[in-house]
Amino acid sequence: MTKRMRHLVLALTLILSLAALTACGGSAQAPAAASQTSQCPECPACPEPEPVDVDAILMEEAQAYFNNMASHKNMIDAADVKAKLDAGDQSIFLLDIRNDTDFAAGHVEGSVNIPFAQLGANFDKLPKDKMIVINCYSGQTSSQATAVLRMAGYNAMSLKGGFPNYEKAELPIVK
Image 1 (cartoon, helix red, strand yellow):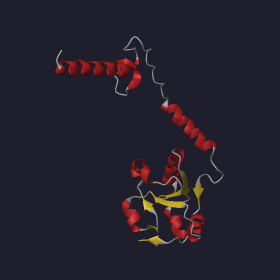
Image 2: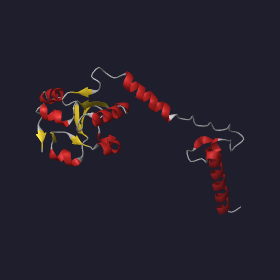
Image 3: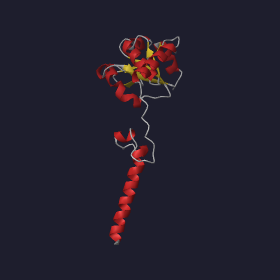
Image 4: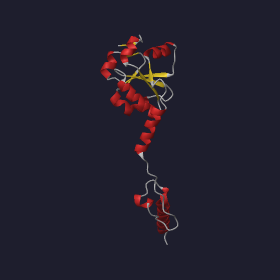
């Protein structure tokens, strides 16, 4: 047997050995049929992945949101935000979910603008280690955003009454 032929036999042996190993669940790229029946007589059938009930998970999170709601109902007054800012509290993150045009026309100094429709695609820009104070036009949309963010594990609060209450509390507005 030539040297080239020995290398070919060795390569085929390695390939077949690898194929036998991965057929029993050793590879995430194994064909779907491999997860239902064993490809080799020495291995038991690969187990089926456990099904995930997405609806049940969402229901559980929604119930937990309402069952664990604090007395403040996940809302904060503009005066409380102002007091925290005046005291130099660095534990809050101001999030303005109004559209870009309204944000540019006036917003609280230091706030970050992520319009409501773009919020889901920008969770990575939100801090997990701060209280996120969300404001919108009236408080309704920020309450919806607060509920979703809290279910996703963020410490979020909705500004009572929305952006107009910032102005009433005399927070520094940037135009």
